Length: 468
Image (cartoon, rainbow, N blue to C red; front, side, top):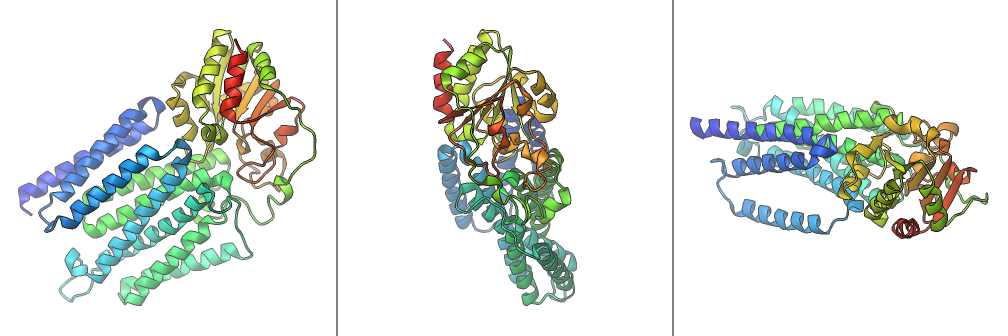
């Protein structure tokens, strides 16, 4: 590579890195998220084009084939995927990043000369072994953990925690063995060390995700996002690719920060999240999600329309059920009608509402809900006690008072939206089934709660017709 070409490549990667930083900054707010996405796409385009046209590339057949195949798959998924399936799509993409890291590390280990990783003695440089080892371990954990997260989010397996006696000790043992093998690999580059370390990393990726319950799945998605970034950064060092190093570090650090913020919002331990030891233990959540014969107060769309039209203020609490029913557009129309009648409307968003960070914010933005009306938990929780109506549409675990009162509950300690303090709670739900965490919601049985059974979209549309 000539000096001029090397300088131009470094400059292009620097521009791409700046665009990635701008993308993260833009995605931190709903108002600037579209600009952030554009910056991210432009940065990735520059990085890909710069890498593809590197003079080190000697054959384009496989590269072009991979680009075409990837573009076809990406465009097809983008057109067909529903917002409700976005969490599992993100988990699936994380698994691909992890496997890519494993494959690159494996290729570099089996043919280090092609990557310029060997010295005069023919041995792989120690620094390269460290980078390679970290990349393959984190990548393998990311892959298998993301696959488990995908199956839980997709409903292929139960979202309930899977735990057994001595689980944490087993995880700790596996972790220590992997660490010891990584150190040993820096001393001796025997193939069995590398492949044993890789296999154990695949196993521990499963073990740290299976004990995590459905209510904590948004944090899992964020955590795996961070893991995928660090895996990419590790392989970036192996490939000596500045763009991959910077991009991976940005994704890894931003994902870790987001995980920390979400853990703080859920009253979870950040270190337990990293180690997979949270989300419910073997003693929690036993009969909590079982059927309950207690009576509930059931209402109709006509009742709900009358109550809200005569209210002074209404706080909307959206959840995953709203996403499944695609009710956000009808909900915004209902709220516009109420505002015309003089009712004050606000939206309350729990940090883990839905199944991935920001899920509800994206859906509301899609329906053109004003950003000024959307508030996070800490900014609006104190207002429930003075509001006339809390309209809960599809949310469940994030409104469950058991999180504050039942130490045996898997969601105990998780901050919730205090909707029970509103004068009237209108709860839109298909039936009396428990939430994603498998816990029955005590809010259903409160004296001030009226259950509105049915499809969220149809219920809101019927309420809208009765507001006229």
